[in-house]
Length: 330
Ligand code: ASP
Image 1 (cartoon, rainbow, N blue to C red):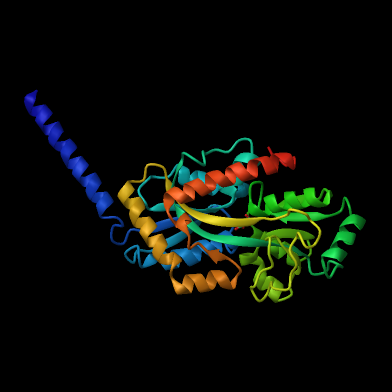
Image 2 (tube, helix red, strand yellow; image 1 turned 60 degrees about the vertical axis):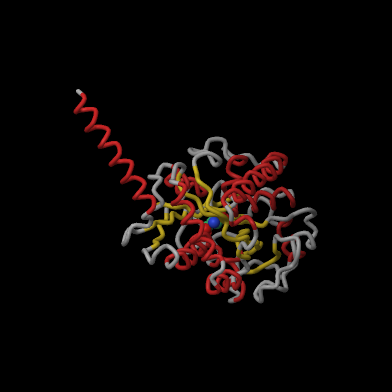
């Protein structure tokens, strides 16, 4: 009996030693790190995740950092996948403002935003733009406004599903102009953009990281930016704000953050956060993001505790706005 106990104690010690060795050795040589993106490939969240993966590769020991597109249900499929993944630092999530608007917008989400994830730090803030199909007969917001009134009941508005940034922005827009539109959900705004350019849908409110290139190439019509102030990005600098266009108080800026499954060891989290901070100061990463109108985080929100505080504040900010606008979705 005594011998058995001694053997099991020795095993437990060995197991403990191997677990802590695993954590300290993170990332193990050649082990792939996967960043789950909860929206379609080629869209704005995919873009930031790919740029980030590239910038984090070196500080993560040169390991491969790959993207896993787990798109659908407004971002909740991918987020749920990471919430349920092994908490070992090899599966991470890049997600956006949906982490704070989902609880207000959707009654039943399959994960808990505040307790199923480790917060690793924020990545960027991203303005949005109101854009239209190229054949839309309006050259500015005033003409768009007249067109909306004349076409009530026939307007299609694309988005990336319930809980996405384009969904939130589109709902706030419909509420502001007091015109109901038929919303057309996609797995991300990349496929929605293809349909907008093709004229299958009329309008969309989407992140500048997906729209500025298309606006610059005149493939879509651009009417306004959703920030409080005009932007300086060359392709967007002539666009008025929604507020200047007469939509009082209309202001949305979205953001992205990095997450790991709850229970990921503290020293692994510290290493990922350190790699994130290196990426956020990487001139190449900053150049790519800023070229598309995004602002890379330089403030205290790159700290996990501040990231968590910010998301909690965003939940407190958006939930009443969403409820007051009567835009609660099932
Ligand atoms: N982030 C989404 C995407 O990457 C778009 C959205 O949330 O509206 O497609």
